[in-house]
Amino acid sequence: MNVDLRSRTGRWLVAAVALVALVLFPLFVGGGSWLNTAVLVLLYAGLAQAWNILGGFAGQVSLGNAAFFGIGAYTSTVLLDRWNVSPWLGMPVGAIVAAAFAVAVFFPFFRLGGHYFAIATIALAEILLILFTNWAFVRGARGITIPFVRGPDRRPTDSWAFLQFNESRVPYYYVVLGLAVLAVATAVVVERSKLGYYLRAIKNDQQAARSLGVPVLRYKLIAVAISAAVTAAFGTFYAQYLLFIDPETTMRLELSVLIALVAILGGVGTVVGPLLGALVLIPLSEVTRSQLAGSGNTLDLVLYGGLIMLIAAFQPNGLVAIGDRFRRRREAVRPAGDETERGEAPLVGAPGTRN
Image: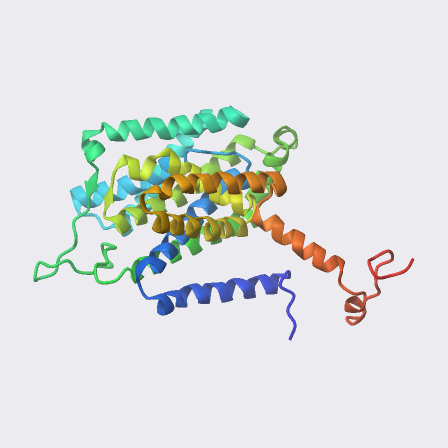
């Protein structure tokens, strides 16, 4: 049975096969660096997907999403550290706090346009970084170390209730996989809903959308609230994965830029784009660091910049557009018999036909 992968059935089939492969992945690699890289790929794929809801669908380029990430990490960690609240409860609380913060702060930000808006989001993340660095309640620059859950023998033990796994890192993989699937599902729902259509209209021509009765500010605020909530959920996971957070780890500008770069490299405004971007950029970063040790970070930045320059110069729409270009070229050289075999007449003027 031939299935057209471009059809809805074909896309669902590809998604199901990819999900099964991801579920089985730890069985083939075990633990170690490969598993850690896979965790980071899924983490940044989810973060880029959340950024894409605001920056891709709505066209509001934010370079301050690390602020939401940090809010999620700190909210759940402070609740755990001071009141022994499970991270599973801290995660939705952090998401709500981040969404409320985003709506309150971005309400005036959305009056800005273009690069002024991007600069404002950078300033927001930097202000929050300085605030948390000097805030004694969250232990300032020292950060917060999350203690291990200990068993009756006083040794660190695994705990699903507190999202801590000492014996194996595999459970962390499945947790972040679930969050990544949730982020993708959220993006799909947004893309296919009325909200998605309105956001794309705002991106294409904000004034025209407003003149047609689209409540522009309302839908921008909805988009940033969803983006912030999803980003904060990954912040909670990251805190439990490292068992340590500080402002530099969770709110630095480099994190915001990397989240945006993953989506831009893959293709903004598409659901597949952030996934492709994370699959290419994150392993490249990890390989560079492992091969070049301490000098890897500098080369990472060179590679990031070089990739973005190449994409901007030759295919501004990202890796997704490159795939579409190859597909169109393959279809352009397809023999006319491919259509006639399905009972279709070849198009007049198509390659391989005579007018």
